[in-house]
Structures are given as structure tokens and as C-alpha cells.
Amino acid sequence: MNHEIPTMHFGPVTIHFGEKNGKYPDGNQVIVRGAEATAIFDTPLAANRIPDVIREADLAILGHVHEDHMAGLHLVPQVPLFVHEADAPAARSWEGMARHYGYGPEVLPGLRRKIETKFHYQPRPDAIAYADGQVWDLGGGVRVRALHMPGHTAGHSVLLVEPEGVAFIGDIDLSSFGPYYGDASSDLAAFRRSLARLPELPASVWVTSHHKGVVTERAKFLEMLQAYAARLDERSERLLQMLQAGPATIDELVRQRLLYPPEADELWIDSAEQRTITLHLAELCAAGRVRERDDGRFALA
Image 1: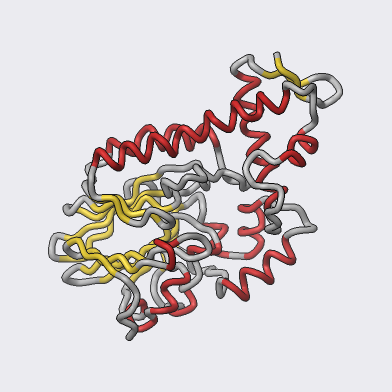
Image 2: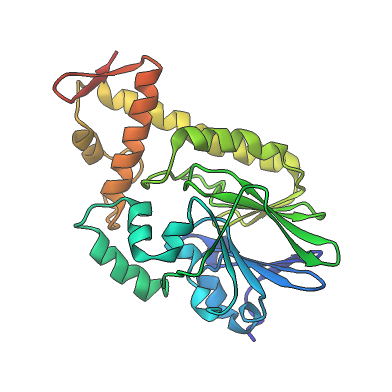
């Protein structure tokens, strides 16, 4: 068993930190031990550094489905795997995952090779769908409650450990990059609603999959959440600035990059830029700030 990986404990909850507080491609591993069962939340690359600990699990619960959250599932192929019903098809097959991403055919084969190699990706056709509000009783008064908070993916959920009030908020990661909603199942409006609901949770500890790790002060959490959410409007304003130069197609806007620096070259970037820009344009059109012209270009209203 590897004891070198940094950890924190909150009652029955243990967080094993990935590299750089779980910065992508790594993540933070949460383990919840009740009197009768042990649950693991997601399984990032960090899981592979504590295989003996991961193999003690009686069940695995995914807050959402992406390759970096399935990177340790190969260690526990026999345990029941629970996934929100909206993300379950993505966990069950590569075809479902491909639809979940929504990337073009020129991207998907290379991406599949990459995630199989780097993230030990394997479909889980046995994944069990859960719904908003589902509770897992781990014994001794320890419970896990799923709270559906979509946006990042259609099924993205916060996993709340009760009664301790430890909330695994997953890829609402409070990073300076801001929210990510660049896949086919992502939704900007849903993300806004989820961010507005998050402070209402009866939590006193907030755990992210990536970047920030653990926040234990409510005032600090609210400050970080506000800065994180502000990135949404900053992107809309940036898009409006891009359109000040004149009408543009989505492809032309993608080449200018809304999210990523010009030197970034991950396989999915153009697809993520396209999806993100499309969502913002739809929102801006609905607000009357942008209009789509007959030639397919978008212009300031």
C-alpha cells in the first residue's frame, strides 16, 4: 500500500490528492467508509497509486462520466458502478462515450487510443443508473446523497456525504480556467443554474476533482465560486469583442479561440471551442445582443 500520496480526513471521508491538487489529467480520490460498506467517488489517475485501498471498495459512484474519472475502474471491475442516468450510456460503451463527447470523426479514433493508453479506459456495460436524490446507506449513520447539478455534463452530480456535510462537487472545480461545457452533453444554461444552487447545499467541506482540492471555509468557498462563475459572463463579453471586428461564422470564431491559448493542441480543442461558442451565441441571441444573419454569420445586434 502506498502511503506517500497526501491525504485529508473528515470523519468517514478520506481524500487522496492527485498531483497538483488533482490538476487535469490527474484528479482527487474520495473514499467514504461506513460501518457496512466503503464507497469510492470516481477513480482518477491517483487511484492507480493506491490500488490496495481502491480494491477495498464495495461500490463506486461516478459524479459524472469523463475519461479522467474512470482511470481507476480497471482496478475494481467486480464492484457495482453507479452513474447518473443521463451519463450512464457514456459509461456503458465507447459508442455512448463518443456521443457524450460529440467530437468529429477525425478526432474520435485518436482520442480513444489516447484514453485507453493514458487513462486505462474500459467501457462498463454493467453501469447502474441512479437518479437525482438517490441515497446510498453505508452503515453506521453514514450516507451518500446524489444531487443532480448538470452543465459540465448532462448527468454531472454533487455527491454529498451525510451527516458530515462533505460535498464532492466534482468538475465544478473552482479553477481560474472557469467552467468547462465543451461537450455534446454540456449545457451553459444548466451550468448557470447549478452554480446558483450550489451554495444552498448543507455542506461545510467542499471537495473538487481538480485544482482546488478541499475548501473548508464557507466565505472562501463563496468567494471562489463567485470568481469561477464570473468566467461565464467574461466569455460572453470576449465573444462580443470578437464580433466588434465584424460579422463572423462559428468556424471563424473558433480559429480566434475563446477558451484556449493559440499554442494549445489537444485533440478536442476545436470541438470544445465550437460547442462553447455555439452555446454562448445562442444565449446572446436570446438576449438580443447578437443576431444570426442569413449568410450564417453572427453579428452584433
